[in-house]
Image 1 (spheres, rainbow, N blue to C red):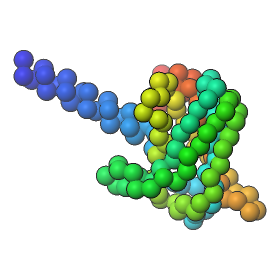
Image 2: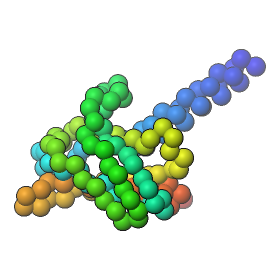
Image 3: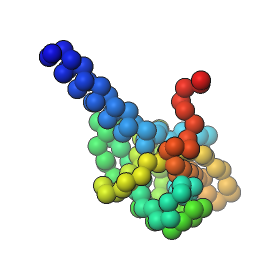
Image 4: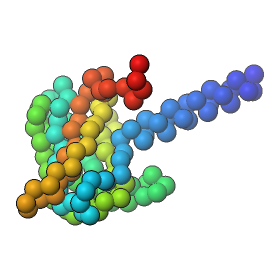
Length: 132
């Protein structure tokens, strides 16, 4: 009975860790640094607020990069601060957030802006990580 309990607890902990890692990424792309992060709402939610944070190696928030208020589908918000390639970044939803979202990251190189574009979309509409 104890073995079953420990197996169940290990499964619950691993699910929590996987859920946490889904909303973080390491800045990549071709540029050494980027000076803007743009978040686009491609979810079915009309009002959405999230924040982008810099994460330390132990998964604690080191700094808030920006707070993003999205007022409907296809709305976007930007924050302009420098962020370096290799920095671990997380996307946080408010504590009372009920939905499930997933995201995609894209790197854009414009003459004035080197931009990271984060597209939020419904988790149910996302592709699986495993080929079926």
